[in-house]
Length: 177
Image (tube, rainbow, N blue to C red; front, side, top):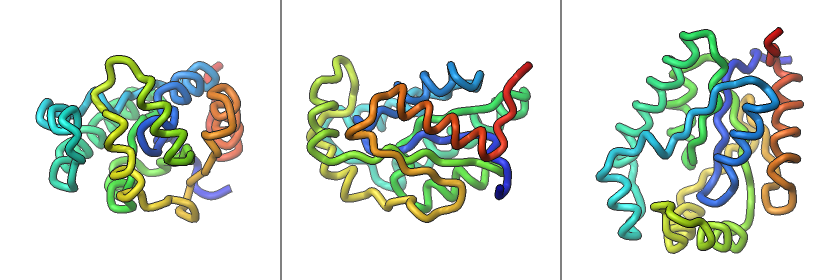
C-alpha cells in the first residue's frame, strides 16, 4: 500500500456519473459528498449554459474554492468525496496540493455515451454541445498515483461505487464504528 487515501475525487467528463457514483459511494463509506458544480461562480455557469467551454482562467477560482472545501471537510474529521471534472493534470495537481492522500476515481466513457446522458439530464447547465470540448481538454489520469480508472460506459452506478469503495478500503479507508 502506498500513502493511505484520505479523500477522493470522482472525476471525468460531463455525463460520466460523478454525482450518482459519489452519492452511492458516500452511502457505502460514510464519507461526505462535495458537489463540485455547486462551487462554480455564476459567470462560469452562464458561460457553459451558453455553450462556451471554460478555460484555465475560468476554472482557477473554482479549483481554489474546491481546495478550500476539501480542507474544510477534512479538518472536521470527515472523509470528503469531491465530484469534479478534473480534466487536466494541472487541475489534479492543484487539488492534490490541498490535501495529502487525495485519490482519484476516473469514470471513463465514450463521447457517444456522454452526449446521450447529458442530453437526457433535465435542468443541468451543461449542454451536450460541450461534450466534444471536454474530451479535447481531457488529459487521462491513467498512470498517475492513487488513481483508479473505471469503465462508466458498461457498469452501473452501484457497481462503480462498489469498485471504488473496495479500492479505497484497500488504500486505507477506515470505516466508522
